[in-house]
Image (cartoon, rainbow, N blue to C red; front, side, top):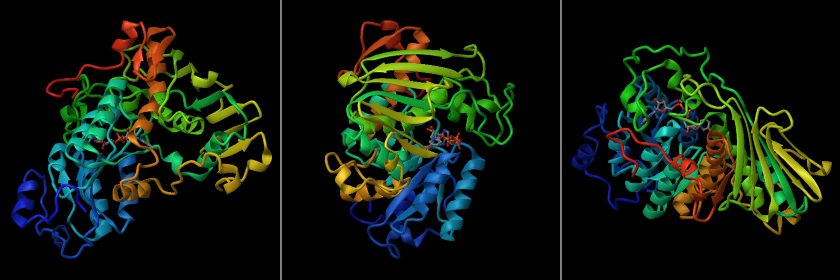
Length: 440
Ligand SMILES: NC(=O)c1ccc[n+]([C@@H]2O[C@H](COP(=O)([O-])OP(=O)(O)OC[C@H]3O[C@@H](n4cnc5c(N)ncnc54)[C@H](O)[C@@H]3O)[C@@H](O)[C@H]2O)c1
């Protein structure tokens, strides 16, 4: 099923559209020409094969109405691992390999893409994919800056594509139940929310990476990997998995996690399209020139509509990991490890709320995040985490970081999406792009 073509491609058209592929298969897959495949199968391309790319892709591989037909990575070893996995699954050699995602996007026979690249690449890959008319399964945080996020939201709307964000906690029953209890008023009026995220830096590689300056490994196209970010001499600890610990590429623990637990907080409060008006953050930072310079400890106080306050913190013992809503008549806490509430009878993990308790404001139900994406491409309905939701779930993290950097309270207009009366803080809403890449 391709939105952009009504007839199967001829062999000649197919070859032309894939002319830049690194490795065309010796025999073109008959399925591409529609001979063996159900006419409505969705063709998917995957970009980025690190931590998240393989996990997301496995979900699509299991679906009989999808075919993962293209993979892209700027690291040859990661790309080969992607091909090995995908081809082993289908027991063929059909998956096409790309180093440059733009060449993959030029294929007319791709319906959708899964993007799991570092944060500094989110905006360009997503905007280009939207412009190419591809539906997008993208990752959290929506992007590295608020201005980049705005560009993604605009491109998704303008091109009328389906977007799903990898804030998959919304598709898990106990997060759904917790948010629905709050949304249906079972803890009364919410007054305060505590959101606990991880702190520090943690190597995501089995052995800690070297932080010394060296030549990049020959299999990694480091210039492409850095892309629109500022060029910095190569260090192993800047790239795969550990890019999150330098602000040139990611946003540390805060931006890594805000799209999960703040996303759930907003969901329960009905703030999917809303945001804070005042943000005051304090953080502990290594020296700016340190290879890993993201905040190791942080605490951000936020003011929201309905006189609700929130504390978003990492590394503070009084704020428990996860999301805790506190209301006039009780409280609910949820995390990946559990669910607790002021009313012990609500604790029945991994089961959804009984119908009568959710009748006032039932929240969107999805049992499988990737399946929800595919179903919504077919139905044209919004996914459980559309692009505006991802944008708003992440904004408090970006603003918290800006407040920590300028070391003062900032004020935000959630409807105009502007920082008020603070030119220095406003400048941090965006970043310079390294040529030839531009912020479109
Ligand atoms: N939803 C979740 O639970 C979850 C968990 C982990 C990571 N993530 C998100 O997934 C994204 C990827 O994170 P990760 O931990 O998998 O990173 P990673 O470094 O492990 O993997 C990223 C991959 O992308 C490749 N890459 C980089 N730039 C590229 C480009 N321009 N074109 C093609 N390939 C490129 C890298 O070579 C690498 O293989 C991030 O946004 C991260 O925040 C989400």
